[in-house]
Image (tube, rainbow, N blue to C red; front, top):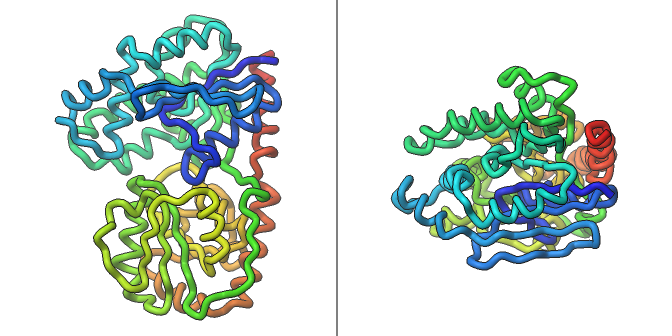
Length: 389
């Protein structure tokens, strides 16, 4: 059985609840049916650990290197915003860290190296010098995403470095996976990537993991949003609190995930900030929700919460940006609502239970037929086999 080594910034979560951890865990859990798979991740803890998920699937979580704090202090005076962690890790990859030592050990017995992002490319010092295949399994077009959401002036100085690293990774990789046709085209245009090198590996779901048993609806509909503490999600929560809540007084807005953190002092009678939730709690929220909302305006890749909302059979109200890359049809699979008319659409359709049930049923069938992790991994395996040969 061929051995895969995967480099990533963050550790997975089991069971995964949101964001990149869903893709990170499920893609490699499925691929471990075909390959011996090792994840090399980082933890914020002082001590590292090794977790075994199955005989062919494990994760090394390397401890945070002492240099991390030193570099962060030097670059950003100890401040911490979303992109600072990414930039610090780019800089750390130039030093003899604990992560580099672990990579060098695992590299020796690996047949294939996969990068989840360009931020750790510096650790792969054998890139272009050996015969081992490389894959860029992208979550997003990272440079485009960074250029959208990095607002801090000091951070933006490093955008050119992100561009260079992603360009180098795509040029040197034997295979690139993009989450959508939009991202695939973006890689081709910006980096002149050969179309036959960039293949599709969309985000997906495990329908059996989010089966819900909904029995009743609420007189005042409950609208659910869930997300990590990530700039596009923060912008969505701001829209819910400061735009939708006042214009939709009969709707109860349930907001879950670490995206709640910046808003802990907000007090509105129809806004409920639930904070981080477990997988079990998330499924209960899906069961209780009458509507799902996704007022996203920035980001990249395919939105995982969109897939989960639709697969669970909750009627979805989303901006066009929130359903990017999925080819969904307005009023058939979901209800399109942009910022200017989001509140109006919610008020208009939220009580039309019969119509929403038909829309949610069509959306559920479409997602469950086209976007399951086993199907995605099987397609990825076909492409991986080509480069391993």
